Image (cartoon, rainbow, N blue to C red):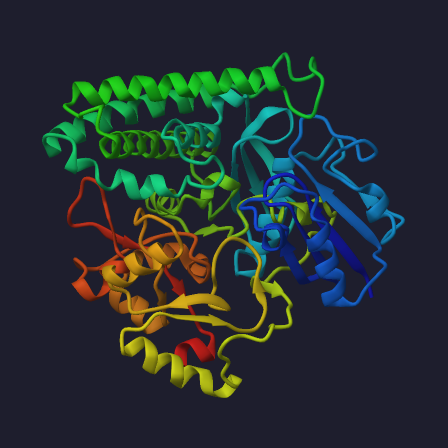
Length: 495
């Protein structure tokens, strides 16, 4: 019997344990220190894995990171002494394996557990990895490890940083509030004089995204300065990229003003900049994948940029191929790809826990009837059951259930001190999904739909009773989408 530990450093720091090649426990550090996307050394997550598996020795501990240069022996992000208590073999990324390689290998292992076999194209896109890598495309063949086809380098080329800095431009929190831009962009027609003007604005930004993608394709060499700096990242180059994308946002602001948007109106600026950032992202991503692959096979998408659920559907529909979006698109699961044989991970309910005494508890066999009656009466119910979710999605083991009305969503957002930028996710049976959702989207998304990681078009304009899970397209009033979790869990199907 072999046991391995996987430790991810940086954003979404985490720990996971696999026994005989299968992940049996995994936790993110943010679950313990309550800091979203925590980058602290994941000591609490490691100890939770140890407690859940009752193990104290591992055949190997694999460590992933995204720093330009990194030494296991000298990092403020890593307690090597702590790790060596659990294993004589602590392995970091070697010179022949990058952060994006680890992402790709981890995602491909996950995809194979979910039915992606034979040939596939793996796309990794995030803020940046080692030596400023920001966009990588791989070919995968019949169970072998992915083979690099193309890689883009440069912080200034990074679409992940573009979206992150656009979030910052709006006064929102980087690496936390990016999802809000999808909500804001849907409101663009409230602030642009005509739909024709908004279409013309989108066409202008779309063309700029196309040109940026062509630059991404030729930026396939290490930046000259990637070796000539001290520290874990090239701070000077990162600062230059910040100013580059900040300048782009200022250009968009002037462009928006020329199309009639009131740049002194805060909500209007949020809608306009979000609309431009999303349009640029979609355009550049599609063109970059097309230029790098020509004719991609089934797609596997990973890296933090693919937490953008709208982008994932746009990619799948554009290329018309089955598209699995890795639900651990952030850095949580990247360490699994450091292993020569990345472990199987079929499902994300991996955080074993003992539920503490609560104000009101129901025997396991009776909760469905009580919750169903409460929800049907219009109440909002929090349910905690079973194992903790690994990754950012609430997959119904730690979930707020309510009827999917806009009013309920607004109440829940107020209770959680959030705004109403985005709708909630519908939990659906397979039959309900076929009834409500576009069947072509269901076909292309496949197993991604278990994890709330992509969107599907609604087959018809939503009635008021389901407006809380429906998201309008910014320019097409006939297109509404939802971010579903299609479940076969017997308890949830019964509920």
